[in-house]
Length: 222
Length: 76
Image (cartoon, rainbow over all chains, first blue to last red):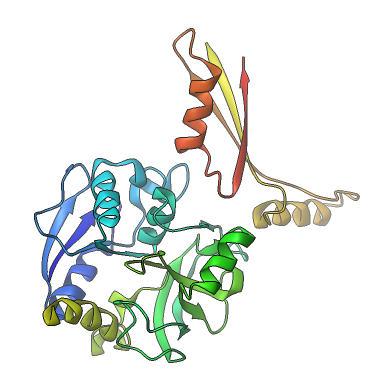
């Protein structure tokens, strides 16, 4: 599988993401935000965590207007896979690839800790390595992770089984405890918790390995 | 010409920052503050003749996230 990790000024989880993808067997290239094109034949685009453009205006708002994001939207429109983690999730909502928005945490605090999550669906390339109902632990590190979406959007996410992960103990006020959502074609996943920070025993947990292995394995079979 | 854009969270979207400010005002002894909503003001220095439609487009494409925010434009 060929994966591209997008790097914005202020990205800080880009290398962790690349390491996690490589460990799962992906061929990874790093792509600068000013590039207008993705490398040829990319299967997965990963938008990493961090504070792109200093979170100016709104988290992810400036990054969503960068040249590479047009290519990412075109990749998704062609049915390509996209994974956005933390700031990457914020970028994906700002581009419109995923519904809703991420607001300031309800308690106004930056939250940095490992949280318990429930896998809500195994019906996606990202979550097929889990069983629905599994409990996993991933770190979160964000100030603006309070997911919100209008009632119609929420109803669609529920009806179409597009909520990928929920918090066991909601840390940030997200509606319906939502930690990660899928696009309508199930090929774009945005999530606030960091699976790439849970892939090595040295991280204190390896619950994220199944996500990357499942994703890369999808292409190994094809 | 100049324009001032006001961006506010939509009615019905909980504003935790505004709520914290309301609470702090109460702590300072200001009674009767029933609600606080916090938004932002963006001042634009524009070429003369920029249409209000163009400014609205700027708001919709970048300055406001219309999923959660509303905006109003004031040409000054």
